[in-house]
Length: 488
Ligand code: HEM
Image (cartoon, rainbow, N blue to C red; front, side, top):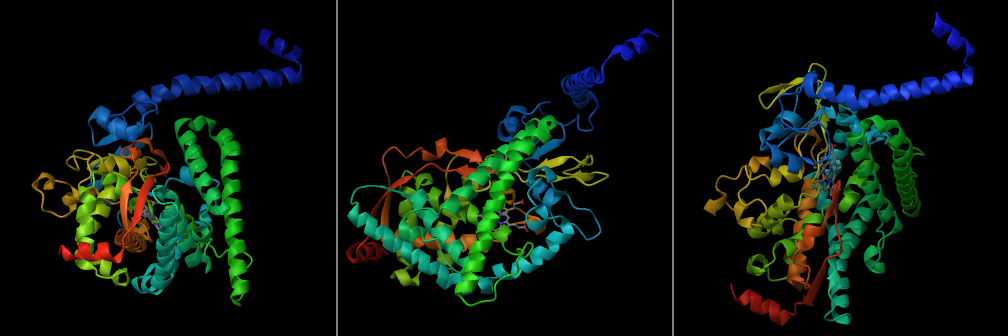
């Protein structure tokens, strides 16, 4: 029994060290040899094409494998088929388990408090509570508040355009000022003062940096899952701290607003699922993305001309433009659909996971615990779904151009699909169309030189991270407006 004798001579500290080294070696062997062999030969998803290690993102992988379903990680699929929306995220009868949100995305972020990450039963309750706030009648109630900030945006930009004559303005910032003031008022009864001060509130910076950090955390968790605990303890903690900072600030603002308005001070704990999650989602960009992108996407400016013509053929006065009346601007509506297709504000996927026992999806049985991803960007840029997918053609949504007769429009779901789709969809549409119409009615807008290919440099961190976009604004006078109207 030589081994036992040997062990008898080893001190406990050395034994601990030896065990640690052995465990690490075994861990390494598992990661480097056993796991890859299992993934290659024994995993229940071997028939689906795709690489065995993560590295390239789904858009590139679909192209590389020429397939509309690819395996982007050992336990994760990405779908480009339009019917995947229904099959992955569609309504599922009570009693039948749904494809839950992937818990990896929301780990450590108090999902119980967030409508977006809540498990099914809790989600149903939260959603019912929130839906009232997003109803058509609530939206009309909110219209005067939103209009006040759109008026202020136009007024501030008129002043700027006169003072800084000839100097282009960074419209990414200005649209953010307006939309953050709007959501601040809708959520807390008070704006952030961004338009007044022409500066972003520090809280807004926290929101953006949280989004970016969270995107990194999730990416690391996906690419090197075996480092999960370490990543969670460092990066995850930083992200959670930022969420706490955000929540704390949200709460202070609510208390403050209640105090000033003489309302009862809300309960010491935030009402679960009642407010913060909506703010956080609304705060991301609050529907401003497509507005920012329309001008550069419509370059060269023939499309801007069409939309301007339509506007002046419809409206004689600024105050005729509102949530209802903008619905008659067919070309502008098509333009926003195209902007949302080319640059979906949520370009990535919010993956789901198959329930115990797996599920039949797009004709195949997908084993349990498989992640199911539909990447908005990939779906809308896939030539199998949209003709000339990289080109900006609002005409494809008007049904008049034969080049786009075979577009699979059912692939287009920028606000997602099913019982967890976007609650703010109607508000986002109403707001972006009204802002754009008011801007075009008041200004001639021209891209500054050098920004024609602005979109090429944009990075994605869950959302697009927009670099400054400079646009020349020339205020329209009554004379010019009369001339534009007289053409119709
Ligand atoms: C162009 C603007 C917007 C786009 C493209 C968009 C897109 C989306 C998408 C794709 C989801 C589903 C995410 C998932 O699968 O988990 C979502 C959820 C949600 N959005 Fe939006 N959104 C926009 C604006 C807004 C605005 C302005 C608000 C509110 C003020 C809002 C509130 C919400 C809420 C509350 C959810 C969660 C719904 C639930 O889980 O039941 N969104 N949005």
